[in-house]
Image 1 (cartoon, rainbow, N blue to C red):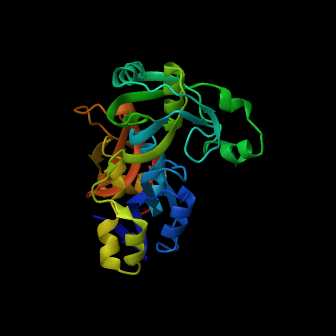
Image 2 (image 1 turned 90 degrees about the horizontal axis):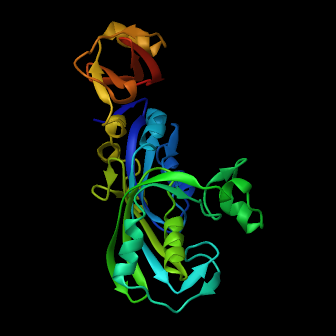
Image 3 (image 1 turned 90 degrees about the vertical axis):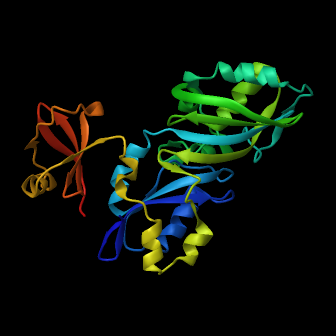
Length: 304
């Protein structure tokens, strides 16, 4: 159930961003409807990319770091024969090749691209350096030294979905935070000794959010000022905390956690992952806490 008071909403919207919009453009449109409260989005999508862009409303913004820990799934199309300076369809062509890879060659490259991978972020990315997006610096001819440094990312699964034609294929990847699809495409080109770039990117899943019950920006604008329908499309804050053990506490301890105090708690029957628990009172979300030595210490307190 969505929690709201004083006409402020607290929860998550499973928004579908179309290509052509920046993630901040999409956020501004949502802000025009949910006025007066804090908003944020999880996992920036480039303007060219489309797909799931989870939007946090109100107190749900405090849980954005927790959804960042969850895996994402992308469908993307690789076009062979042309390399661009941005590694996607928005850039200038800087190289061409004639060789057409076969299915077995592509599968062989993908097979080796699973697990912890050292990946170099693309220069044209949304990564920030001193508050400035990397792609903004790249357009000015500036390449931060930190961009060219490899970063370890986790690829859980990657597979060839289909060969669209002789020069295009569709690939699905499930990966951890910090993974760049365009870097995967570039890796494929290097391994196969040919030119290629990404021509299409769609994020089909991010943590608990997928293509079921998605909300387009157009549909959201239609629901503007319709409180009943807005309630129906806002997911509870706990949607992104589903993998953290939830425990019940009484009202007295709930008030102490809200005030930042540590409380005694013994739940020896459960072993929470990473020593974290979600504390609730009468099923109302109170705080995310660390549990150590039978003590609950609040990490994030919710004002609901």
